[in-house]
Length: 66
Image (spheres, one colour):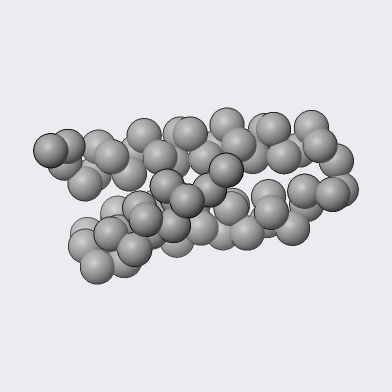
């Protein structure tokens, strides 16, 4: 099983690529992009604070992003 920190890093990178895709789609994906950006920010703060509970929840939320 992969360590949570490593798995989160990979999901953040994947979701940052989604942000680029959303930006290319124009205003129709603006809300999705904003929500995803906020989720990434919360995840990074949780990682810096070593808040495992928030990290696990954020990981699940990031994995659900398409």
